[in-house]
Length: 171
Image (cartoon, rainbow, N blue to C red):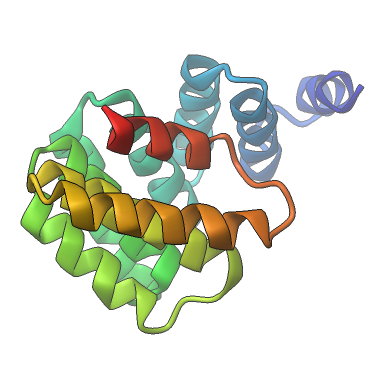
């Protein structure tokens, strides 16, 4: 129903970057990451300096593991625009993980955790676990994953990315 309403609104207001981002969120929640990327790219095309759109495209590209130089540029631009916020540090850490730069990802996760709360904290805990696993520190990764899952369980159900991260650590 929500997607139908957003589609209808986009027919009336096709140049609304906010509606394109909303469509992307809905598609992402349905597991359609390619569709979400297309919608996020459209939002960014309409508002090329919109930091949350830069971050969203970067985050999606990193999850797909492709166009990583572009993902890196967008994540850095979002950080320049909004500062070193935990959610933005999480995106850059995810890009670093996709690039195989696990040390850098761990440093970013730890930096973000210093000021993160709630969902941002859980995201960064999962990122930390992934970085540790990538560094071959399996015992530390297992412990970090357990902590991330424990804190995730105390939150309202989150993004499907929490389970994605857990699967990557367990590989």
